[in-house]
Image (cartoon, rainbow, N blue to C red):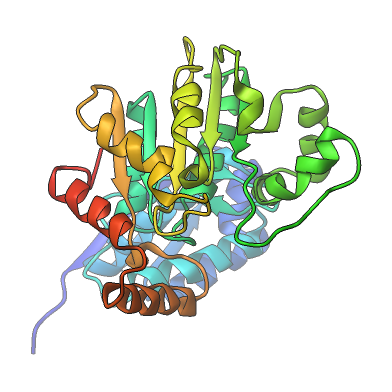
Length: 346
């Protein structure tokens, strides 16, 4: 029978503050809970925790402790929320010897206390590219987090005062349907086209704060056509649904970027709604800019879909169907060519 290696570690939580009680709980309720679920012995002495048990279990608990303490620096948590976080942590590391060498990178904590983190390797490359490059193209199917992660990065940059404002834009192109005349002001006319950007914003920021930033123009949401003639300095700019930008619009947008700005262009070249798909500004930009220094390209696939699991199956079914037909052949050839020539990462 293989013997287990025993281990003992000591961790000082520092002071009797909110963070301390969130970890240990009132009456040491969390200490008892951790001892049971991690299968270790924890002895609290003042602000110090003495952890004893099997070496692998002790290391796993220490990794959890580092993760939760890091999160508590960014947001407040109740003792129960810490216990729930421990359960999630154990589920993610079940069957692993020890824990991942790198902890999850939290991009942003939403107003609902939800931590936004990249979930796939492609998403991690995407976030890394946004941090390091001035312009990043994120190309791939719906549901892969292209726009959502870009929005989270934009809000994080604004919070860290790396930029002064966020600009969210997309082409006002109908997705197949003819909506006809829309009544109201200019803002009311274009609102339906920009609604997905509002949805992502309100998912991360509470309504009152988001409304304040929109009113003060700290966050600006506008159709792509409204970007003409502007120079965008110290801004984080997201161009969504870029496959529906014309060649002229894409060139115009890319030449608007000023000093201290960062731009993320997202799109799916298999869902072009322009009358002539070969005129997509995104398709042309991927060809023209492939060797320009300072620009990153990240390609997503159905494996990166983070929506309902059936969405990935739907995307895969359509790809199989289109491979056997003429529809979408140009888009696929562009994607295949670009990935072969080094476009699969920043």
